[in-house]
Image (cartoon, rainbow, N blue to C red; front, side, top):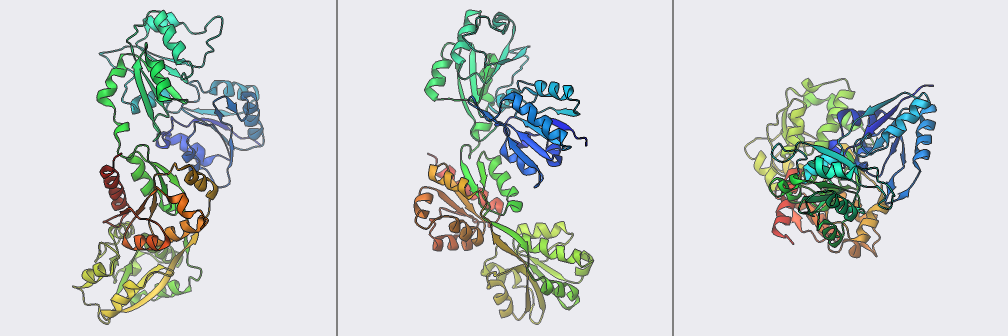
Length: 508
């Protein structure tokens, strides 16, 4: 059997900085062998059946030696499997990718190198430091910061670095920062040369300490800065005061739990992450088709009997059309129907299937529904309502009060999910979570069920609770949560806006 090894640069930390080809390699891999500095979020792109093996090296604590990693890569490839060797940053820039490639050549194993965005460039950019600038420097060097200061003879040409290079970037040099500064000064670098150390660059945990060669070691020690970090030395560091952008984002440093179903969480995660938050995905529900699909199938077979079809959620739209297509029909089967979509997100989803909604109540509240249908005569009209099992009766009751004949059919239901509960409880115990989001009553109830009743209040004490709307808030309050945020616009965008306003108002 033949296979291939892809040496893939995972980028500097922000999972969106993975290359298109790098992501494809993750998706196609049978085995993923990944490092400490590879973002865990990238593993979501992997196949469910892919084998995932962690071989990280953290602070001198190595799960496997480099020789053992090399042997593991060879073993997996020789078993006929496609291997993605996922390495932080770029595999050929202080990533030992060259060593791994040499082993593969010796073992006659096919391989490709997929370059990644190196942390030297990305972390500096996210800190507002351009490594080159035509007014300040015309040269750039990448240097290891790991060299043992007790070595009799350095492998680094310190004099050339100090006198001949405009910008220096040291990888992993936090522990040796005092020695690095001392050697640069000793070889002619001015003591007032600007320096910046950037920890966890491009991630929500990014932290930057600046100074000059003569005081940077003291400032790093005072700030308690630890690895992983890169060090930038040069006049370009001055530009940070003008150009820094990433660390100004309003939710930077906030850790937010997203309880929404995994397949639906992406919009919420993306919008919060764009504002600087670190999102921890702990879905408490998953959305699945109705157990008995005969009622919805029968309704679809008799669509000609209906005057209206009303969708109350994005899920309702998706699951309805799944059954429509499964029955070998398409959107033309709805040509005679009036449509209503509760909320703008549902209307947008419906538009994706080629239908413009005739009515779009802004919220699911009874008053909004009544107001939206107030100018439409639905008396005697037959309305199809495909939605979740055990949904609130507000809408069908109001429509029937207006004289409509409503047929409710179950299109989908939610099931509890209890993945990674141990990690969630660890985070709650450590008090590292700032906010928990709830987007439905189901997420509230199922989240509460994950926690021991005896520990519930203690674990959520001090955590901000954000709800997508009044119905979810009501459920949360009844369940024992103190709700701090209720979105005025009951959408993901509305929830994000409400969270931003809360933290802007409650800056510490």
